[in-house]
Length: 387
Image (tube, rainbow, N blue to C red; front, side, top):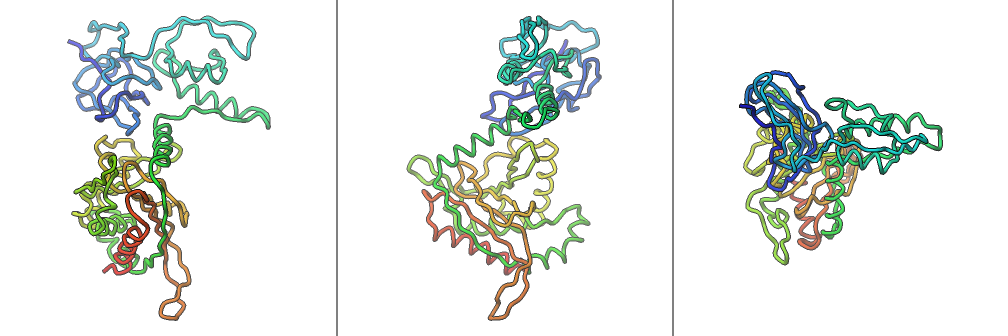
């Protein structure tokens, strides 16, 4: 009996997902737990494993299509096994016969094609000639990625003065935009900045890098900041909180998230649970693992949820100071600048030290500047007195 491939539920609040890429084709033999497709949701990108052994009998949804949780995506079974390929109400891809008025041609072209509402909308909004777009999806269907590629090529080859590029936002980019606007409209953002001498941290890292590497752990500076922030949050618990109506809800668990850049794809914030209960080596190990899987789009949805505080290390790109936006519904976010050697005065003597600016952007509705400064002073002390 054939088995359905359906859109899985990848989180409590996830109601739909976009088919980013099929990793199999019709006729392929697959084993249980083999990855068969990549899905993008507003929470995370994920590879979906096969639920059973068998042969891919039919793929019903094209790459780039967005469908509801539970939608039928395809069938797995024995070769030549009979299946039901009728469209379902949940499937947002439809078999259309339509007349398309070409903006670059005087004639109207009638064609029968598989095209999703999302792709149709992009083509309509940008006045594109559908006949010029090569489809790379199942059975030659035109996908969202095909349209974006066509638009980039079209605009790149245009004459100077006519090279504007119009690209539809990815689901992740849309989510980031919505969250950033929501955060600015929700919290009273204030930023305070401290300078930290990283001499002791650098010395410790230099001494221990090899031993950590022997255990397959890459010791990065971010691990030190995670450790220091967890200690500081333990004594400044109001920063580990959220505002619910007129009540400040202080969280028991300290779960620190850290921003991972995905290049043009945006960013994602994996979360290390109970950060305050872990050693530096454990934090470094989890940091490496989550970062690697974030960039490989293999994080689980629960690994980007339940954060209570966030760190963003913008210094890895050379930035010295930045004012981050709070990751709602949290109270604050710590920014880490680039570590640079600077001349500082220590007991009336000028010395060259490795210095870094750390910034705390906090919700002024929940805490005041003095409390924020006390927290940053604690982080600074932990780093400067590292042994």
